[in-house]
Image (cartoon, rainbow, N blue to C red; front, side):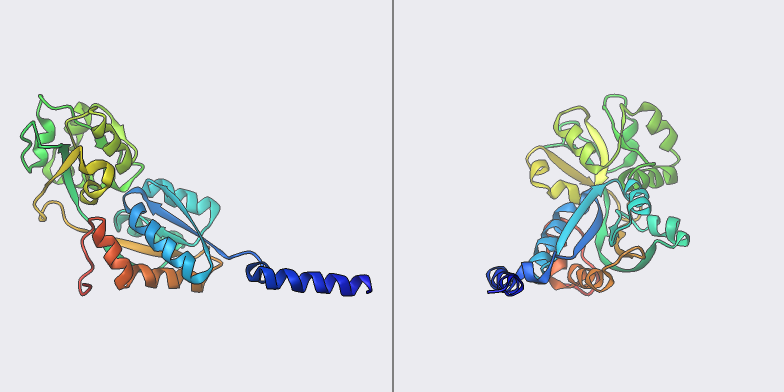
Length: 258
């Protein structure tokens, strides 16, 4: 048998043994996801990978930090913790079409059982008998939203001056609370549903007129080379299966979904 015939035979045999190899490497989606939404988005990514033969890579962190990374590295999808990041950066041209996949809402986070009897009022952050931490408004959505709420009450500068420290994102706030580094913080309500927080912490809900639900916008990046795959991922996240996963992890549902 000639060498060329042997090579053709070998490649055909490899294709039969491993159809994926014959198709070449799997396409990949790079998704920038705010910390608070990682759990539902991770489960949606697993569904999508199984159905589409796609690899989904999740970059997670504070919403502003993620946007800056997307500007440098490119990617396919971006999910910040609140819509202000779209308003802030839309003119730069990186953020394309979007779907709403749920709603974030701010709450106060305390130790399990609320031993310090914290009331559902952000002014409790000024109590001298409490150790308070806060999110950094420059790095993530939890700090940005906390600042907006406290600014409306006219107390943000004072809270920052008395806070023990500022944390970069919601995960860092939760970890510090679990380690008893603080008595009180403001955090996204959905973080209270995380398994590692349920046993140690609890949420104190705020008046929705003050802590308004914030839309979670999953945006396609204009840098994406996988436009159709990105849009199919968006459809899955915004559809009934994706919505069920967001509700499971404590997010408020999109109106009209069940």
